[in-house]
Image (cartoon, rainbow, N blue to C red; front, side):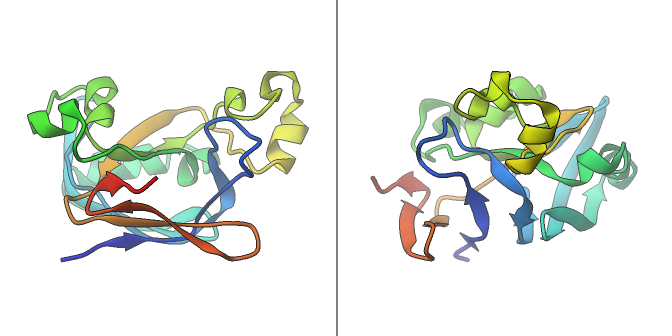
Length: 175
């Protein structure tokens, strides 16, 4: 089954490692690997986004842990990070679950539920909290990464002005 993820608007190219805009993520994300959170395994789960906010979620395994994560506070209902990882990377090819989010996040594309790093914006460390919020960054008490992506995944970026740009096809970069 081909999957296409759209509506992950990021900031203009002049920014570094652009984070998702807090209020402009829409759609459903299906995790492709288990998430280890608070000593619990969360597996076979999805998140639904509307205007950036996680509005629905479900896990066949670890529903209470997923609920605890998302319901931590208001900021944990939004994204702070999105990372694209080629399905051809050495860690992805290892096809291993490390049971440690810091390792597992590097084996596949992932989103970060929670806090966005100001270092992802040009001169971001010099911006006030108000300026960071105005720029669309999410603030939260936590940042937890969720892996997604398949060998047949397609990712289309949307440039300012609405032009589509193919970023990934069949799980690999196209630029």
